[in-house]
Image (cartoon, rainbow, N blue to C red; front, top):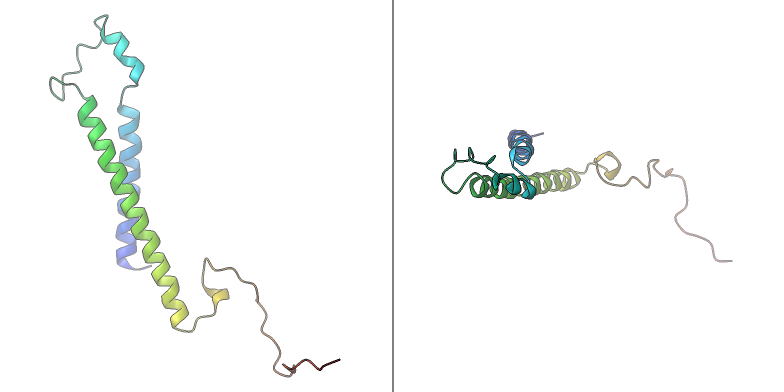
Length: 116
C-alpha cells in the first residue's frame, strides 16, 4: 500500500468518526417542540440561529468529503490492480479478480481437437 493510500485511508477513518459524532450530537426534528415550553433556551452557543444550520452545513461537508475520499481510494485500488496486470502478474494473484483457473494447463496437451 502506498503512502498516498495510507494517508487517504487515515483521512477516511477520521472523517467517518467525525461524521458519526456530529450526527449523534444533533437534535432531532421533534426536539423543537420542547423549545416552545422553555427547555430550549440554551441553544445559543453557535449564534442566534442556533446550532442547526452550522451543524447541518458541517455534516454536509463531512459527507461530501467522505464520498470524495472513498472514490479516491477506489480509483487508487483500481489503478494498482491494473498496474499489477501490466507487469505480468497473473490474475489469480491479484486481489479482487475472480480466479477461474487456478491450475495451469499441462504443456503436453494438444491444442487441436480432432474432427469426428
